[in-house]
Length: 609
Image (tube, rainbow, N blue to C red):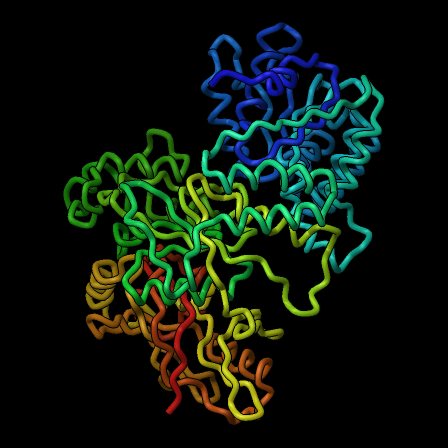
């Protein structure tokens, strides 16, 4: 794609330039960033190893790596250092002292100290230019690390890409006024004098969509937000929203029939609205995905299904996969594909991994190469909060306007309007304006961090539904509580056949496993009536904590006998370290080490006797 004059000015700036590039959605920011790297290297101003690229997220880092990998091979672009801020802090610590343990924040704070003490030992003085992506998302200790780099790297120029209109992480600073905001970090950078004074560039041309309301949204209101003119921004956002197509309520929303591969999303202000709207849609037969973060240890189901019951010392070679285990392979996946994926996850090179090696890889959260998917027609509606949707784009977006909760403090001036802008600017083709209408009926528990849909009952507040599918509520061991290995294997096979993504599951209250313990909810696959697992014992206690936090009634109020209308989010492989308790399992079942479990989600209808 050719560069316009504004983009070309950024790309052609000399290596010692300090630049702030304000670039909103649809401005070709990533193309400009990658083109600037190519220009600096191809013009002979620096070697690839003398460039440092810092990104806010792993997803942004991976996309930059992919784009840079497409550059001319003679640029040797693979030698460019591309890091997230957290991994860069680890790199600094490793070079300065050889020690990089601790939490992410702890490592960032220690890296700041090392940078202040000896930037040479930290290895940062080798870089001639630093490119920073998504600077508006950098807050707190990471913003402090950036301001330290500005002062400790006087030899280097910086190109800082930012979009102040999308600075929506200020909410996490409410409890600590001492933390640095992204705006404060950018103000520090703009005062930088070495190796040259800072220049401000703005990319004004919008390329993502030709829809008039989206063009208007991403020009005038965007410029107002960048300039801090919040009232003007509000007027512009109101106007752009009024031009969007009306879609009625979430329940009544009717999507146009999508073309194959067309992406659709419902974007709401908070998780409660997402859970409610997604639950209604899936019960109406829609394909639905909630945009939640995957756990680091959510491993693909095919690993557990393939290796269930195999002793730890079993060597998983190609002959075994082509023979005894061939019927356990996913449809359309060859033995060679599975063998390569297992070897790569275990870093075994050409050697055959053993089951114990695979268990270790799972416990260390090693990534498995995705296997070919036989069904590529799945095209769900993505339900996402505004925060979770940031950085993503969809063809069509059903947007619920951002209305702050009553009494909610605005973290920084203009925050509410920036939230609205992010939510509305996710669309590439069109926005649908829909009425959330449910915010007053959703409450969040102070004790358990769950959402509940509420209704007024006399003078009190009654609960209609609970959030159910929060990660970690399922007891993986419950899927193998069977008298023999054969029975467990049969149950696991049935589980993986029944529980495809989106299948409806109801929770039915049963007795506790032992006296004095919390009662257990069994998961019942609705269409077959078969039990496919259990919730963990603390799930019931969490529901009671939610009810007490919201209603404040006495402790003798009973748990719901049923929670109806959850759905399967996915099937994963688990190891003994993930399980609540191994007690009561037959020895041969407990020793099998790997099995599958289903994870559910949704805002389930609560039913009392």
